[in-house]
Image 1 (tube, rainbow, N blue to C red):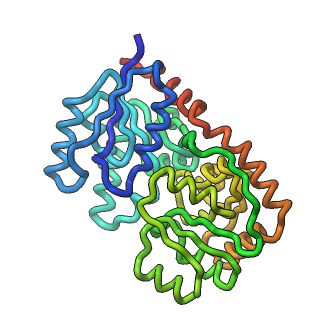
Image 2: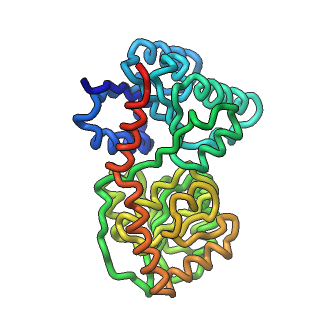
Image 3: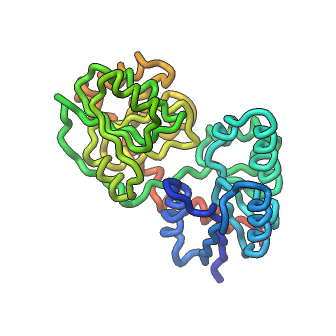
Length: 330
């Protein structure tokens, strides 16, 4: 009889669907191999009352095997250890809080859930190393399973617009490093497409540097795919990431990528991107200029990307989750 897996998700909220998309992709490959049940929290993780309610609901809805998919790590304490899995996507974002908030997050979102879980999956080797620095736990308990790239991202070649290329920037949050990218492209003949809500300060910086840009928000998966297809270069020089989905999405579509030479991004990109120092405006600019001017380099990175993305195809990632589920005792 197929094993039943209950996936616990945060309450859906506008503009935040990366975790849901990830596991929807995985579940599509698990059809017929496990019995999938999805449980979405009835309230957001804010305030003591809501969080106690979430713990109660998790306990009431536990299944044969339980998988907490991320962001609501603390509900792990309401689930049986031996047959429960926790996925952690990112460590650095939890470090942003200061004082008491930082200590509370550290304990209830990292230490306690990790110690209680039967297994913990992380999306990169970088995230595993960061987690082991924060929590004293057997390294064998932490399993690296990368994110899969959605099947909608397929190789779609297009001529490179060398005279005025389109640069696609995914994300505007503090770690996406827009404040370094903007001055890096100042004066270059290019158009910058920015996906994500811009702050007033970011808009002012764009105007100050006279950047030719368009801003798009709340895109559907299909609309985002079209932005990749229309782009010439995908820029993703973040200061930190738990993984870095735009890297492999660009690899899959056949667009050259510029990303950071640090952490998970260099791990995910391997030899399939232009790596730059995210703290250096000059190095980001150098990388963009090289990608525009050097046709052979650009085409080699695109070829490397088509090979790199094979590691992140849904069937390969789902097989790793299936092996983990089958290894768990009930």
